[in-house]
Length: 129
Image (tube, rainbow, N blue to C red):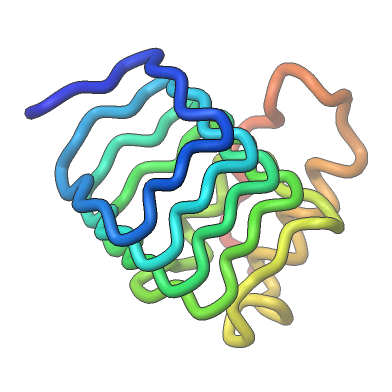
């Protein structure tokens, strides 16, 4: 698996990049332009994706455990599921695709992140019953 572990991409223009299956654990993407990226099966665990523009990106099978997604723009993302967000840090400034904006699991995760301290990231939110 290719790796950009702990890489620094702050403010980078990464539009339409292909990161399929790439390990980007602990990478810093703060405020990067990642529109229309291919991120299927990418490992973004503990990555800083704060205020990143991911509109139109494909995130199917990407791992986001511990990823910081505060202020990230996820509108029009494809392949993103509530389960992928269950272990990520999200907040009221995170922009979700329409199908996830009102999802019970996503709303539960928002509440868990809002009620906890900013670090460490709260444990994964279980599926609402």
